[in-house]
Image 1 (cartoon, one colour):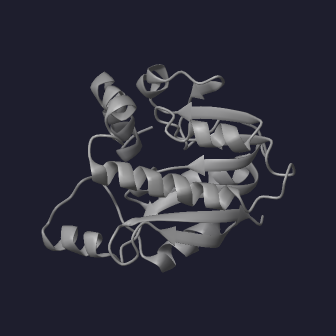
Image 2 (image 1 turned 135 degrees about the vertical axis):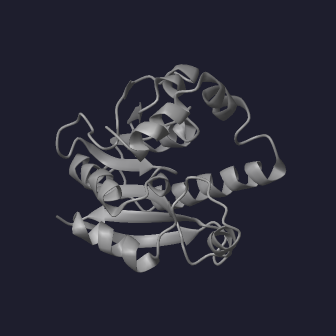
Length: 211
C-alpha cells in the first residue's frame, strides 16, 4: 500500500493521536460535542429505517477508531465487528470482536455483514481510484446497507479553504462525482443528511447495494 493510504495509516498509528481520539477528540469543546451528538443522531436515524430483525444481525464498524459509535451499534445489532487500519486505535478501546485491516482490502467474504458504518474515511483520499477501491470493498462485504460520510465541495467550508489555500489532507467532492463513484461499484444513495447544509463539508449518506 503506497501513497495517501500509507500516509494515513502512519498518522493514525500515533499513540498520541489514538489517546486524543479516545479522551478528547469529541469532548474538548462545545462544538465537538455538538458535532458528535448530531452525527450520532443522523446515524441512528438511518438505522431506524431498517426492518426489524432482518438487517439487524451483524454490523461492520470500519474504521472504528476508538469506538465512538460502539454504544449506538450495540443497541441496534446483535454482533458488532470493529475494524481499523491503525492498531493504536484498537488498543485504546479494545472491542469485543475486532481486528486490524485496511478498507482497501477487507479480509472478509462477500456479504459478510448486514450493514457497514464507514465514518470519516472517504474524504482522506485524493483520487477516484482510491475511493473506488474502498467503495467496491464496502459494497462487496455488505449484504445491503452502508452508512458513510464524505466531504461536500459545494459548501462554504470547502470554498473558504480553497480560497485561502488551506489544505488539511481532506478532499471534498462534487455531488455528481460522488454519485458517479457510488454507481460505478453498484451502490445507490437512498438518503443524505448534511451536518449543516451549505456550510459544513460533512455529509452523511445512507446507501444500498444494488449489484
